[in-house]
Image (cartoon, rainbow, N blue to C red):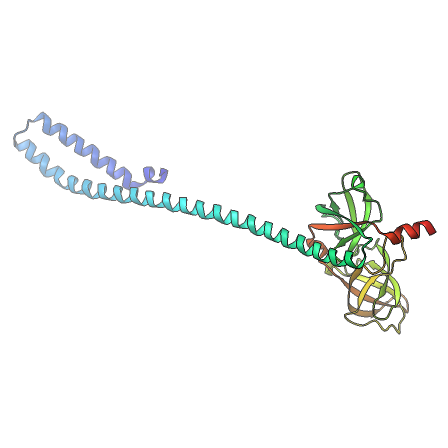
Length: 285
């Protein structure tokens, strides 16, 4: 609307109106009769009346367009609001779907291991400076979580509790070079350990290291925890083999492991707080 007031069209209208008012004043000063002066005035202002009429129609059209635009903008605002609501519903649906998948896989794991006790937590922060997907969860020691507890997504291993605080904890993931856990191939029972690798962190992979050069592990083999540590039960799936290669620094072989879940996109996880095997192993210790 401000552009309308500044336009040359509006200025022309104002000029025409000023001329018309001037003509009306001259006509009033000369009386209502037809005089030579009034005839001249009428002759001069006849085109002005026509221009004024056309400009009035133009102003009406502009007004109607402005009204239409306002209604159009109102409809856009309404549609944007509806889109926002639908996006919120979609986000809620995706969260619910992810939660259902988490519970479904956790339920399968618990049915196989009835002694497992879990604590659910949300991912509340990520360390952007850490390339190994270290993240913070919403539960800590007040919820029974301790350093070294296994962190899972369903039946898959995500990492371990690196440091537990009263109300939150920091998780070190399986792609972190500082992470290490005993593991085995469920088909061949070949035993070694899985650790993260700076070389493969961009792909989100970890390594099943120190394998014999004659290893029978092959593409697609499933690698799971061996349960040697008192904090890590046997049989938690780490991932599947994507490639087998020889180390360049020694004569050993390693298997490249793709984790069972996308660690970078996690928003919820489960912490294994206790299991019967843990108590037995601690008692033996």
